[in-house]
Length: 190
Image (cartoon, rainbow, N blue to C red; front, side, top):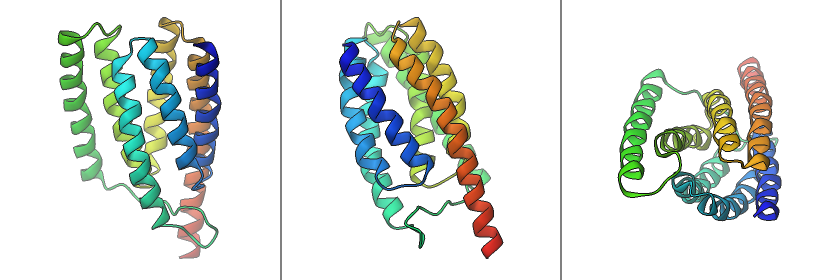
């Protein structure tokens, strides 16, 4: 499975780097990464992560559409603010999703880490939703989640994936800075 895991890692890094640069190509590259990682996670019995890859594939279609509707003159997506009330609702949905999925995985599967995997899955969906909606806050959440994923994957001995997620932390910091800079530039020009 190491070769497939490596391919998924390469596609994932490329897709996240493109997203950090606010490039449309991030979406098809991300879709390919979802397909590859779906197999990796099934093999590792990380079923919530497998479901996450399916959900990400659906979110990719939505995000691709949303970003196409909000391109700037430079061909990059414009960043949008995240209202506090919407953020709180989305976090509450993440908590409920984590508890429901965790209970399901704990009760009816042989999932290796049902509660942690489910919480990371639920909040990854929140982060992806925010990214699809063009909110800088997505990068803050990805930094936290990716750091936790590193530990999960080390525990499951998915070392390539653990290294990938450590790289995602770095890419999320780069994305955060790039998107913050874009917001400052938009504010200055307005």
